[in-house]
Image 1: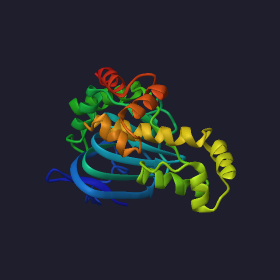
Image 2: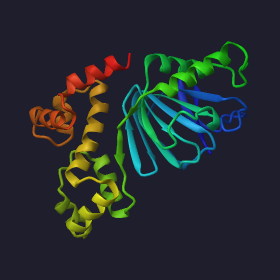
Image 3: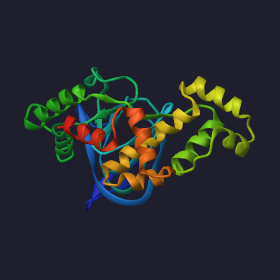
Image 4: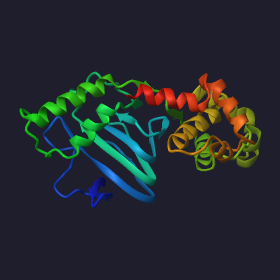
Length: 274
């Protein structure tokens, strides 16, 4: 299956020649870098090893299990070995992938989750991409690998998952909302569009995600907003992109959901990452 390769400052899909992180006889293997793309997707696949996908810049979306992670910069998604997942990237992207032997990551969760990545951990991971594939486990690179894993085990979990239902009809709605977040269609509107009783959709959504339709869509909007705001978009622009009449309505929703306005939330998050 294809991986990402760094080549002339671009990550390209390739078989990486002789390099397959799944078969490297070391505790960890890492690769990554920068690329600009109109859109690229790795179809659903799974690894024997655990994997961390770190985003430092750009739009990265990952689906695994019953969740979609819209990963803002300085966050990563942790994927335990054996969990099928797909990855899509778009725009000006800087991302890094770390593969870890499962027995070396016993302190990390055994289900997919988002992790907040400190500047130290990010630097260690970027450094790991430049280490020899067969690094000296008893040398300096081996010690870097040990510190990297220690720091990874301390990374706090963040709730950045958008629950993806199993039901095919709700998945269709979810995919449409992700593709066009400004669509303000209600559950009744969706019921008419796909010829399913709104009550049926509401019942299944509650059973599979524990959320009402309004809260479910709001959760998606918050994740998209965090990513776009972190990339420098204005509150006004994000509000309009998400279908709000203006910035004040968006800020009110954000404050009710997270307890503070977007600017303060992001500022405190950046401070916490240092």
